[in-house]
Image 1 (tube, rainbow, N blue to C red):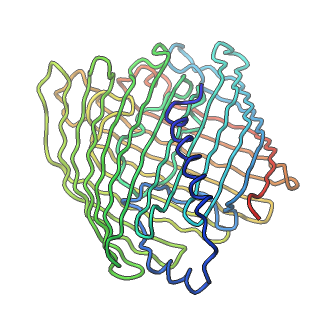
Image 2 (image 1 turned 60 degrees about the horizontal axis):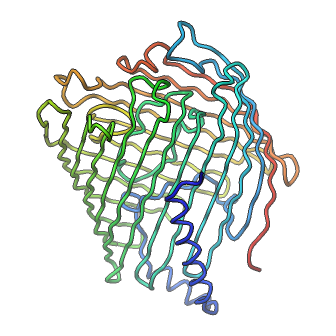
Image 3 (image 1 turned 45 degrees about the vertical axis):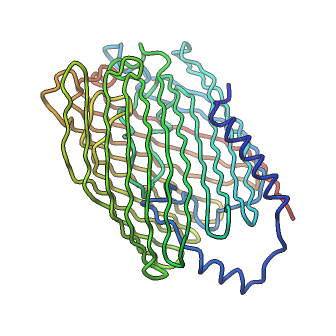
Length: 444
């Protein structure tokens, strides 16, 4: 069934789109457009919550309706890591239709992607599953000085190795990715919204909230992990020093529950970040933010543990005509992600996309996370561990509607107290995908 948050946001999106379409004004002159762009402040990565672009500038498209079908065949050497003495290999096949809608109006930019699918395992057919994936992104200019952003993404799949590497963001993480069971039923929903108001030529304030929910429907597949919920809030002040430099401060609050029904583990954080962002034209940006963080960790019947610690995030993004690069590093304390307890977390993510020629593209992603428990005396808490994952994809366009991809993925995880991973921490996958897609422009 389509996730309730996405349904609600979809209705909001359609209502706003109808309103915006009815209010579209004649196009402004080129000079007026330039002045408007100069007057409008940027929202730097440490507070925007947006991911860095994954596509190169030449690949970016707007105002289109796209549909497609993807056929995957992959070999995985570790599909049953937790209940066999020796890892079992298997062939995995999937079929994923996709529909995507992107529309840019003078005051509204909305995107919607929906991708159901079916995954089949040749040897372990009991794991066959119907998958669901949906994302909504709504950016609406409420007035010349106020903007609203609403996003929601939902995933239901047993094929989680494909989500091993995340998009790169310049914002401080609200919760860790945590341990990733290579093959396990999972449902993940991430929703967030933000509003900003530019009250002077060089100053802006804003705020928002987020909610993340992780569910493992079949707990027997993930011994050592548990469902988790995370709620968060954000408020920020953004000041423009010059056209290329921004400074400011933001406050972030998070509340994470692991095993929500029994409240087995709860982590709260309050963080004050001070940030600086530097833009080199439209192509390159650098950001750094840091400040004090206070955390509280509770695991009944043990007493509450709290302390102060420094938090840091640094990131960069570069998008040119044929190359897109993004990387980030963060150090923070957080909970959630299916792990018991609170952890000092250090994480790094990177992404590179290079359009070699008109028909050939290479795409690579990498991630590293290390989590150490904040209190080693909590014998019921996880000691932590680390995750290293990477993916390289080579794309070959065959005609206007067909693309062939070959992908290699590897993941290594070391979590000694998590049964689903301790026996067989490595997963490798080689796959081939055939993608058929059609695209129709919207508007003119």
